[in-house]
Image: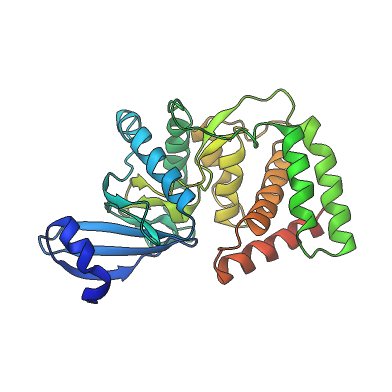
Length: 291
């Protein structure tokens, strides 16, 4: 244990830190799992962007009680310092591991369709949480603004002419595909790495820095992206989340949202890890190639 690194935090928490290890999530910010002397487990997250820290703090505080009433476990904040360099937040470690890391319920397991249904139920409850006080942007619920932003994102990326042509075709479909659709609360990164399981059931939801107002299919589209191109248990997930898998234009809407979200990540998040950036870029090029 590096006392120089954790000494101040130990004083803040009122007891020694007995152990620490990098978390299996937290691609954009450094995330450590801490074990305190009394056995309590906590998460320490340091933020490259202090605005991200402030946004996450506000969101977690605001959603904690409403989420609990709907059976959604999210971490409780213990300590924070937004003026530190880097800004940091300590919150309770929820039980379980990310679904992506679970041998019992991961994508390759026989139980994945059941856990996919449970994740769909979780999403249906999350999007009904109150949004008052969250100061959320509605870019992803406004097709005209979204296309304008996507044009700017694309201009900052190195895309081949054929890829730009494919992207232009997708962008032209967005206003009609998403016109007059409802707006819901979206987690923003509803991916297998941010949903926890104990190997039997969902135990919690983490990572709230991307919460936003969006089209109802925004979170399902990104869930599907995180599962992979095979689309394992997609119908089970959609059904539990309250969507009709046979809805006209559902596949086109999901693909468009995935493409635009990848554009946003590549253009707006220079702090993405090299591994995640490569994965997003490769998937973007593959999807554009299928258009």
